[in-house]
Length: 124
Image (cartoon, rainbow, N blue to C red; front, side):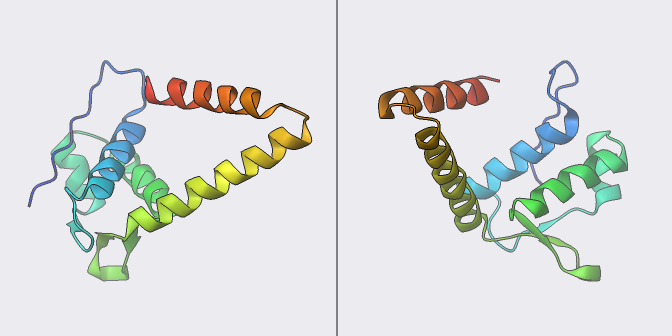
């Protein structure tokens, strides 16, 4: 199975971030199933017309996010990302809610600020 990735050189978003986002979205949606083996860094870089360091940076970020896992010389695979992503997002939301309350924000104001931040992040 070939991974469908499109890097837009005219996009203001860095290529490694475009790659990270697309792999993460495909893993969460099931397009890339758990256990799917990803191409090597060099091979993927060549296929996408990117520098190997760009792909390596995306892979490091994905591994840090729990989306992929490296199994030594066996390669890099899609991990059970949904659970890890949900846990991290819930922890971040909990931290935000606690911080907003400590700052004395009203519930409605805290929700409005969070919605603004989510809207801004997803409109890119």
